Image (cartoon, rainbow, N blue to C red; front, top):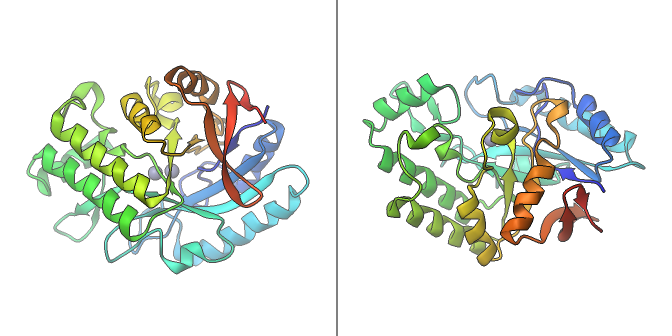
Length: 287
Ligand SMILES: [Zn+2]
Ligand SMILES: [Zn+2]
């Protein structure tokens, strides 16, 4: 049975291959839908974001693939858009108008260095340490609270179709190096954010990238958050955040087993232009 994947990066930004290589792999694996979600352009020269001048070439290439694979599977054109207040948001017209099919809204930047450059929280450990020290004076709690505050602002002002890696803020928190997810203040931030997601109608992605790339046991969001989301009936979809063609369904079977054991019965997928809950097993959708 087939899967879908709505989160992937090609060599238009920080992925390894041309879009067609991912589409070919998706067709070979029998996926029902494949979505491209390059990092949307930002007003700084960052190597992992699409360049503004290449936006048209990107949409044209994905549109070409849509037609090429028309009979086999649904190809979708999207962007992973950052939320930086006053600068960029998933509601920006240029990212929501035709030919884009949906948006993934993610927070990768938490405020700015004194030189005006945004601080990227999911980069190298040295950059993470630098921002934490220079911008936040190593006040981890304030930084984490600001991350979730930005996420909530995005959900209220510019709700995306899909929320990308909702608790990315813990990426460098291996072995609770900076904080414990059990701390009441952290739990409160997450609960408050989930309430905001529920009100927004956005779908939260279950992002398996850390599992196949770094061997982490849990996806984004953490399993305790997924349990809470199930209680709250927040819709979910499963994405790999692939940066290479062989990653397009990385750890999906294992994750499906975990989701079933948590009590999840359905994942959202885009069919006939609508996001729908569909039953799944370890090999993909069941209907
Ligand atoms: Zn991301
Ligand atoms: Zn991504």
